[in-house]
Image (cartoon, rainbow, N blue to C red; front, side, top):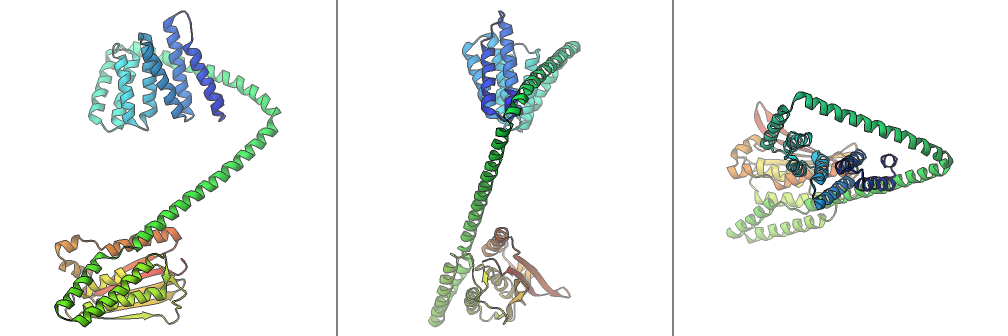
Length: 441
């Protein structure tokens, strides 16, 4: 069975191991204790073979069946079989699910506690301590370890050494017996393999080809799903409009109405609705033309300028060599940084400020520069209320996440650099440089 599993012949291997277990259960040596020893040794061998070949599911099933059969018989000797199976299951779970291992080692400890000085009980206590430690229950682990030390100290050193030597010799003997059987079977299989070599090679080639084909389609499917998930997340982020901006826009309309400035309120609402319509339309597309994006930014700047007409003027420059209809860019990627310039730089400035946006081409990239002569980020932070300091801009956070996802999805280089402008430690404003690839459509 072991050899068949080693050669990846799972069905034949499992069949033979099950047969060995059946033969062991039916063993009639004339001495009941000897028959149980045969069953336990065979059960332990099956555990070692399955564990060595990575068949934990078969291992757990085999050991669980042994527990059920042993518990049904209910004899003292069958308790030893139940103990062996519990101990083996505990070893299987020890490194993967130590919490489960704890229960099985506790079962083993409970079964063997009638003879606390025997090796089975000592082993159960030792492994239970180890399982508690791996599952993070350190107090229980220490308690069991102390119990284990006391048990070991209570046994004469010579008795321990004798038992350990006997176990070592027994293990070596089993290994030698297995090795002899292994060599005999391999010799027979080698003789058979010569006769069937051609068919085996053809089968292996077909199997390898099938494996690579299946692997290719599996990897392709996984990558498609990952790409789909990324696209869905990007679409979700695109659809989110900064609630801070909407709230303040509605407040501005309310202010115009309160001041009986109906013309300005109507114009503001009209521009605001255009911007909302543009944002909603663009949110369904991964990219828009640079021309459409600049049009959206123009409407947004007009709105902000109308809201703070005494606070700043602005200028939007586009390189004359750029064909804005042919270049595709992600929508609403620039707007949050313009909003930051207005709200955190220019709004607090005593005199009238100036905001300059420049769009130019650098090699295979677009370089968008947003520069204001506001009070600077440090001073703006000082002027914020406690609530404002705790608030994180949804637009900026969404934009950072979108840039990360876009770089991952397209293997491109979106980048944002923020530069504090200063002279002689006096803040002169802030410059934001956004690098956008032009080949992501």
